Image: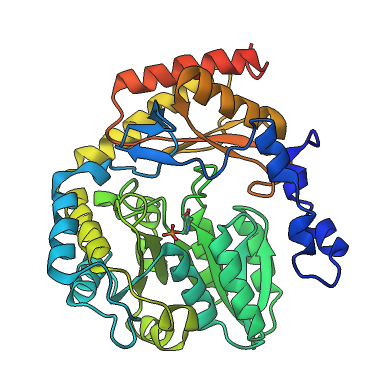
Length: 419
Ligand SMILES: Cc1ncc(COP(=O)(O)O)c(C=O)c1O
C-alpha cells in the first residue's frame, strides 16, 4: 500500500483519467481499500453489534464509544424507544411516499409546529435526512445564474452537494476562507448589483468542533442585503438556551434567515429539519426535487426524534453534562500536549496531521485499548489536517472519560505525538 492512505483516496482524479470505455474500469483499477484491508488498516464500515450510548460492541469487543453523535445520550432513553415502538405499531415502518403527495403524516406536521415554536421562526419543515435539508434548501432557492451560493470552504459535504445541484440550474458558487467573515464581506462586496447570495455555513464545523463566527458572518450578510443559512447539525441540543443551537449561543438567532439540522445527533433518530421564513420554506418545499421526489421520514423516526426533542427541553442537565464532559476532555488532552484546535463543543479533535499514523493510532486505540474514535484523513479533511475525531455525550461517566484519557496518553506516546 502507498504510505499515504489518504492521498490514495484523493487520487480519484487520477483514476478518472485512467478510465477507458468501460465505466467500471475505474472501479477495477481501485485497489486502495483492499490493500488497506489486507494490512489490517481499513477503518471504515466496521459493523457495530450494539451502540448503547457511552459504550458499544464492535466485532465482539466492548469499547468505550467516543465516535458517536448521540450528544444527549437519548438513543437509549425509554421514552424515545417507546415512542418509536408505538409509532411502528400504530403507523407502520414507512409512509411509502414523498411528503408532497401520500407521505406526509400527521406526526410530520405536529413536529413542524413544535420545531417552529421552539426555534422562534415562522415555519418548519421535516425532511428525511439532514443531508436532504442542505440539498433542498440550496438547490431550491438558487435556480439561476444571478443566484450565488456563498459557502465556507470547510462546510459539510451536503452543502457542497446542494451547491452542485444549484450549479446545474445555473447558479454560481463562491467560497470564502474558512470561518473568515472579513473574506466573506469582501466576496459579497464583489458581487454584481443584480446578483443575490445565500451565505451557507455549518454552525459547528462537524469534524473540528469549531464554532462558526456567526456574528461576523451575519453582519457581512446583512450589510450586503444577502441571506444566511446555517446548518446546525451539531449545535442543536449542545449550545444555546435550552439547546436552541449555535446562533442562539452567539446571540444572532433572530438574524439568521434559515437554520437546518438533523435528527441523527442530539435527537437520537434519523431525519432532518429546517426552520425560517414561511414563504422561503413554502418555496423550497414546492421547488426542490431532492425533497419533493424522495420518501418521507418514517413515522417511528419522527416519533423518536420528537420524544428526544421534548426530553432535550425537560432535562437541561443533559446539555450541561455533555458540555462539561467535552470541556474536561479538551482540557485534559491539551494538558497532555495534544493539539485539539479551537473547539468549544462536544467534538474534540486530536490532530495527528500524518495520515497513516492517524489510522495506526485509531487501530491501536481500538485493538489495544478498546476505545472507539473516528479517524479523519484527506479528502475528508484538508491536507495535513488528519485527526482523530472524538465526541462526547451526556451519558459518559467520568470512568469512561478517564479510560479514554489513559488510552490517548499511551497511544499518543507510542506514536510520538506527545512526549
Ligand atoms: C454538518 C452536517 N450537516 C449535515 C449532515 C447530514 O445529516 P444526516 O446524517 O441527517 O443526513 C451531517 C451529518 O453527518 C453533518 O455533520
